[in-house]
Image (cartoon, rainbow, N blue to C red; front, side, top):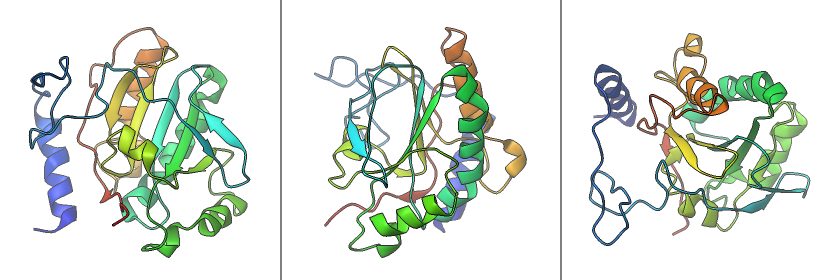
Length: 213
């Protein structure tokens, strides 16, 4: 079965049924485990790891609790990341008046995947593809590991108190622009209203993060 077929099945299965409660991890203070029973580093309802990363111009951006923040792990070459890209940028544009930030983070190993190099990132920013959204380089991959990021994209919504309120895909189908990042927008609307999202977690769908070997 192809990665694309597997991803579609995961999203369809999620759309048909409500998410089952996750079991707490032994000795992990209730932290959730993934499907393989491994302890997750960051789970919905837990404090988001702080970070400070440079953008393509060398300016540093931090998770500082100034307001709700979308942390989106993404890259230059993955078809899933590219398909969802405009929808995520539209979220940044539409929610900026409500003091929501979007931070795009590229964690991929550029030595094995040159299309994810810093210079390639700069080229996309110069071409206006990010519409003012900071495109950050996670050279050490420490931030991606702290968030337990799985795919590009993998999206986290962090509230102004620094708590993860949503994690997963932007919407149900990367091939359907009409979905308009509906899951991400619904999560932001809930957080801005002081509520917990009805759908707090969905399966992250995309290309696997390219870890250093």
